[in-house]
Length: 168
Image (cartoon, rainbow, N blue to C red; front, side, top):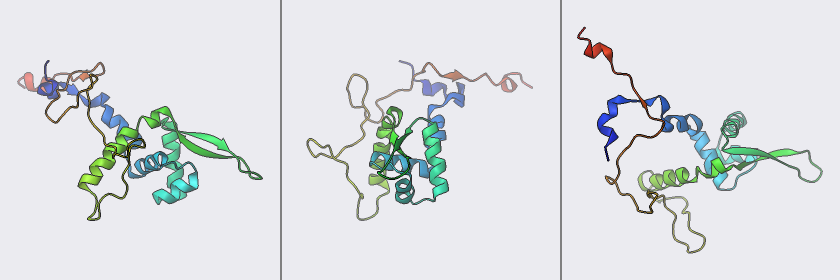
């Protein structure tokens, strides 16, 4: 298997999945809203309060996350009240769980204060802490240094720099 990293200068980053993901969830409030969605927050006022942001910022982030397909608005109505909308995770949003778990795990290790992590997520059936793990499709845990970067179907090769080879 050829290690694509050796050809790093031949790639175009115009089709970078990381950059595209960051366009959707790459700010603090978006990430914290997603954290709250995984903790069960559903209502607009609760998102704003729990994330510690004003209503305009909450409205903007919820609109962006809904437009991106991570959350969806669902109507609800309390007795005697007008219909309102709550937010729930879509399948695309639920698939973001591994990112939240990995980020929390990194933060617990490298950014927690002297008291330690504020919450521990545990497996309901056995009580063991939940961790993000890198695993290949055949079920092997992948340790640092045990992987190579290979071309995917969306890799765009950069055009050669003609100014360097033209001699002039």
